[in-house]
Amino acid sequence: NIGAFGNDDEDRDRLLPVAVDKLFKRDSLHVSYRNCVVIGDTPRDISCSKPHGAFSIAVATGPYSATTLSEAGADVVLNDLSDTEAFMSILNAV
Image (tube, rainbow, N blue to C red; front, side, top):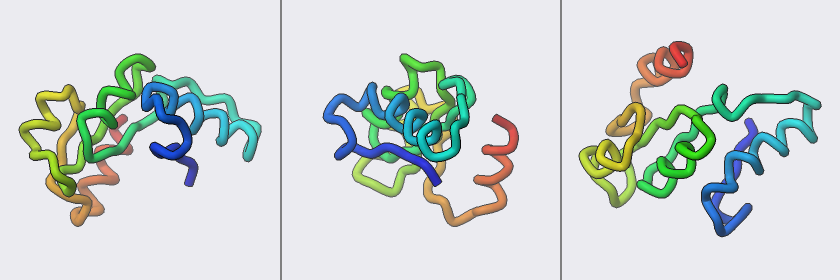
């Protein structure tokens, strides 16, 4: 799996480009930001997907409620990731 996290850059809006760059360096794959999925549990995680046109999945397992994450603009909000089948069907639909 390839990802980017808060320790990769203080500016969360730069995390998606960091992740895409990691994928390119590892596998020489060019991926459009619009073909990416940002998964997170904070409003800042969700907002970092927006400048790049990426799909966002919020998971309400942290300190933020599903309502707060939805209001932050998440494309999908899940209470947790325990339903693997539902999660995978969301990813497959993106």
